[in-house]
Length: 233
Image (cartoon, rainbow, N blue to C red; front, side):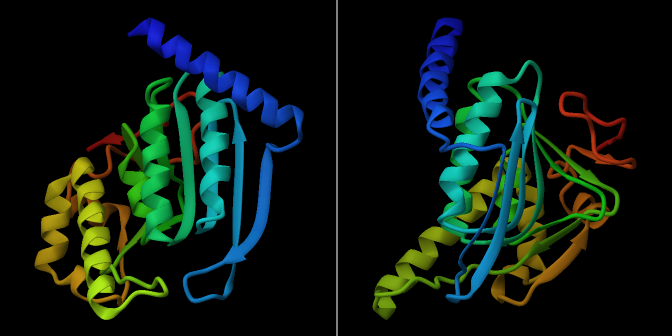
């Protein structure tokens, strides 16, 4: 197992060092891409050896940038990799693939997701948060949930219905992996029956699904390798 881990790290490191040498991977990426409704949206992704920050909208264009930066952080990390989130959500398919990149990174390092105080994790962002091996939220962090709707193009009604059903199934599976109780409670409230947003504080989320947030942090964001002193949930 250890041999496979180091082989994967070496291969990933060689590939990504090539990207860095070519200037294809910088510490901070800020860009505009097309949102679900065709409108321009902003994304900011940065990384250090201790973690990655994802801010703004999740789009198809942000997926490879996020995955590459996360991989570099996982290869270089000498402690937990912290994925800090302050995102309004966006493309659910891209978020699900980001979650897959987190699971790959977990082969190299312990991955902790984190929503700081006064930050938000909305819609598709909750999938990324739920995938962390440890999930921390500031006391003033805000989460948002709503029902899944297929917004893709070039699909007839029947095909769109199938695609929407599959997307919703994968979304629930991602949340269930963190805490199935939360999903059941939100379903009981009718949250997923509509695209209207339901905003919940970190405390409210913990009350509905006690395992969805591992810790609630009362203080500012943690350092890159040290978890905050927090109330265990």
